[in-house]
Image 1: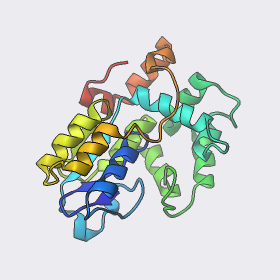
Image 2: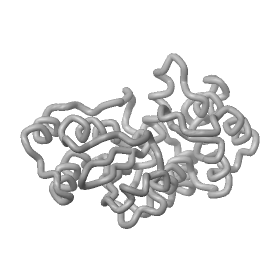
Image 3: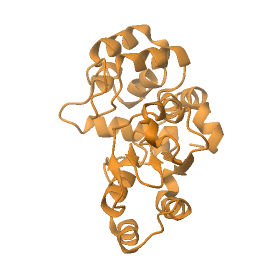
Image 4: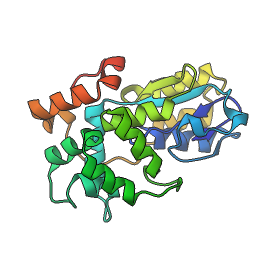
Length: 228
């Protein structure tokens, strides 16, 4: 969560937020970080009237990115450990468990027991209470993160990861941070940040898993017209 004198940026997990955070902190003098992956409801009252900016990506692409990023870590996070059975499961099985996590009481309880009671401001930054919300909402995991992050925000400006540089330039101009030398150079020269190596999403999904994601993450897929 980054606040400037013109806007409030909410960081959706594995959805281009690291790039936006870095640009704002480097190029906008008034920018300051006031939390990490925090939802709008946690915004201090002094900043709740600022226009909200965020990002979104295809859920299929999110799951591919999440899986390969966690696989590349020396110590994958607790969510990956639970959904992959300690790293024993491959992509399809792990992602099926993640997408359908809200219906899996055994894994939900394991996650609830392993998460902190309060925010820690690193990683996914979920708490025990967040697991209860996931259990109740019955959404695919990415749709849960999306709905949780932006709930309560009035008409947030959501930028698609697929066109992030162009839409970020336009959004900053619209909201009072017109691109100058620093922003222009950042958008033109800085490579994607916090990324993992993998093939394009269609490479990883058979018909069954693709259909499960389409059903469980229809909240995001239908809203933005994503296809695999």
